[in-house]
Image (cartoon, rainbow, N blue to C red):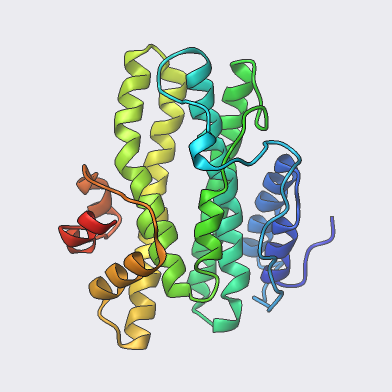
Amino acid sequence: MTTPVTLSDAACRVLNTADPAEKVRLTYAYAHEWRAGNIAEIGTSSPPDRPARPVKPVLCPPSDMPKRSAGGGKRRTNLIHAIAHIELNAIDLAWDAVARFAPLNLPKAFYDDWVRVAEDEARHFEMLQNRLVELGASYGDIPAHDGLWEAALNTNDDVLARMALAPMLLEARGLDTTPATVERLRANGDDATADIFELIGEEEISHVAAGVRWFEYVCEQRHLPPTPTFKSLVRERYKGQIKPPFNVPARTQAGMRADYYEPDCAAKA
């Protein structure tokens, strides 16, 4: 494997790789090369609007998705597969942030953060894929939806919008839902899956924190008030509804103040 000249070139190679296993392998390799200094320049390679995807899973509207739950049998497999699909998309979201916003000349720490996030998401995907295999399934066996990448397409024009919708809204929502899912998995005797979900939930806190950190940095650069700006972006660019309960301890640990999501943001978002 030839090491890419720039980090944005590496990001685009990952984004243009369809095979999930190869996407994970390249993510690990390029993250290592970046930290080692073998990739030293950010560069300005242009990312695709959509990352390459394998033939399976078939992508369907969210309303057509199979039922999933933390119980046993097929619904548990559906749940694990759905989260694996989110983690695969999250690998691409992190690399897309690296390449798409490279021309902004943000501090190196911005790119450090999203390379690290991509590596975390790759590991999360691997853990979930391995768990699917243990249960007699594999990634691609079950239909999935493209909702997460729709949020990416809707924020391609503005790093501030991307930070608001991806880590601060969607990933933060994962912080809210994970504890109850872990509890149900353990109640149903599936500690193996619960352990994976719990670890993912803990590590996602730092991803939300990265979103908050760079959202507030860009707000400062643009002389914008963070909370009203976040709420305005949510109203303008997010069509779904997210309601309490919120995982306040996890959000607080991520540096996300309550005024970002309560009370009027909770009512709208």
